[in-house]
Length: 197
Image 1 (cartoon, one colour):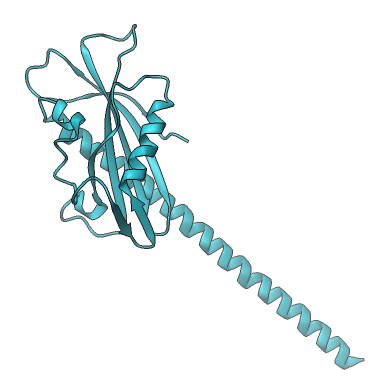
Image 2 (image 1 turned 180 degrees about the vertical axis):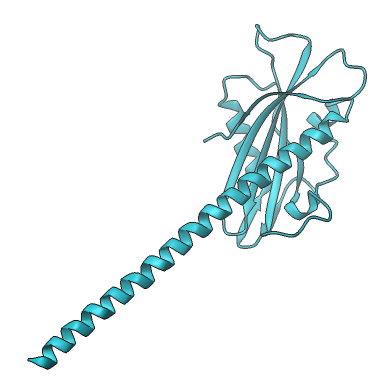
């Protein structure tokens, strides 16, 4: 009888220990996934901010919208695949996805989405402390102003997406405006900012 009680107590303690280990591993995985989601979100936001700054100094957006001109942040041709950690990014497929995202919006796009800036996140800010490996892309597309909008502005959708090394990704969609009568480059007006679902 005492041997049976010892065996039952031992089984109970092993079960509790196993449950504790599994619970701890699950909590650690959830925390890591949440942390990566936040990091990837801020990387996408930073890429959009950098692209808006690059667009603000350009007097003519037609070269950008045609795909003839890309940001200095770019790491090669705007097609093919890139790999960051275990994540493989197909730039052609991602561009098609962004085109479908913009086509589904209420405001019509005047043209297709063009990849403007793309590369490892570490290339975004020189001299920054290196963090987890991430890859960022920014697309641009011209928007048709709505009737009630001021017709003297040129609207542009700027879409940023960041990819984490373990598969996480986040997307930011920003609408910027520039007056048509602006003779020199300057600050752009941000009309909307959202994270599409």
